[in-house]
Length: 426
Image (cartoon, rainbow, N blue to C red; front, side):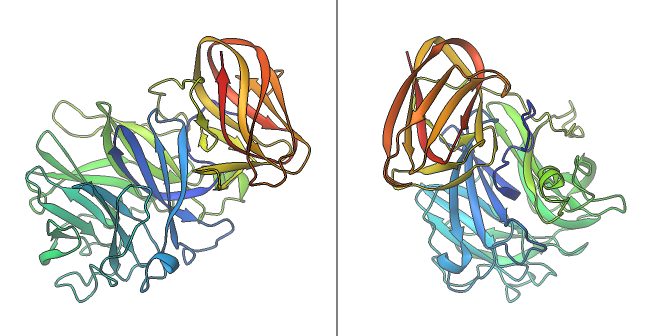
C-alpha cells in the first residue's frame, strides 16, 4: 500500500493482480493470478500470469512471471483468468486465450517453466456443446474417485459448462455438460466439503457483481441455489469479481479481487485490480455464511524466523519497490530513496545483534532496519558499499541494537539499492 498499515488486504501491493487461483502445495499456499499492467484501460493487455506463495497467509513471496502467452505458446495471444492443479507430480495450468478458447500447459513445479503440449486449444467452439459466449474462466477439479473436471464459460445464463478430463489432464472425454446456474455471469469455481459439491460463481445483479453458490451431491448435475457468499466486495467499485476457495491448516479461505489499491494510486482505474483473502465459515447445515470482507484480512498463522535467510521478495506491504529476476537466484527487490518493504510478525526468540543482506548497486545507499512503525528510529543501518553493478552481488553486514520479541520489520532504503535476501544474526 502507499502508506503504513496493519491491515492485511489486499495481500499484494507492488503489482496489480486479479482472478486468483489457489492450491496448497507442499505445505504452502500457491496463488496464481492474472497480471493487470500499470495504466491499462481495458483487458487487452492481459498476456501473462504471476505466482506467489505463503505459509502464514500474510507475507507473500513473489515468484515472478511464470507464463506469457506470446512467448510460451504459438497460438494464443492473451492470458485471462487461469487455474492450475497438481497430478502425479506434474502441474497442469489452464489458460484462456481471451474469451475464445482454453489451452493447457504442463510443468514439473508450480513456478514452471510451463510447456504447451498440444500447440492448440484444449477447449474451443468446436468442442461439442462448448460454444458459449465466452470460453474462458477455467476451474479444474479432481474428485475423490480420481475423475477430473474442467468448469468454464461466461456471458450470462445458459453459458456455464463442465467437461470431463481424461487422466492425462490434457484431453477431454465426451461433450461439455450444460449447467443451470441462476443469474450466471462468469468465474465458475468448484470445491468439495464433507461430500457436498459447492459450485460458486460471479453473478450479475443490478446492485453490483457478487459471488453466489449452489450445492449438489454430484459434480456435474442437480445443483440447488443456496445464496450469496460474497456481496460486492469492499472498494470494488461495483465491478467484476473472481473468487477461489480452499482449505489450509484446517481453515477455509476465499480469495477475490477488488480495486482498493487503484483507488489510492491510479485514480480509481477499474481495470487495475488487487487480490484479497478473507476467512470463509460454514453453518452447521453446510451452508456458507456471508463473508465479512474488509481491509483487515486474515490472521497470521505463524511467525517469521529472523535467523533464517529471508528472501527480499517475501513481502507483507511495501512502498516504491519493484521485483525483478536476479542473477543471484530467485527474484530481487529494487529500491530507491524512501522505498521500504515490511515483513509482518518476526519472532526474535533470542536477541538479534547483527543484520546481513545480499545487496547490489552502483550508488550511495543504506538500508535502515526499523521495528513496528516507520516513525520509529532505526535499530541499525547497513551502509551499502557499491558492488559495481545492479546485478553484482555481495553479502554485507552491520550490527544492530539488541532486539527481542515479536515485531513487524521494515527495511527502508536511503538511496538506490537492489536487495536479494537478508538475515539477522544472534
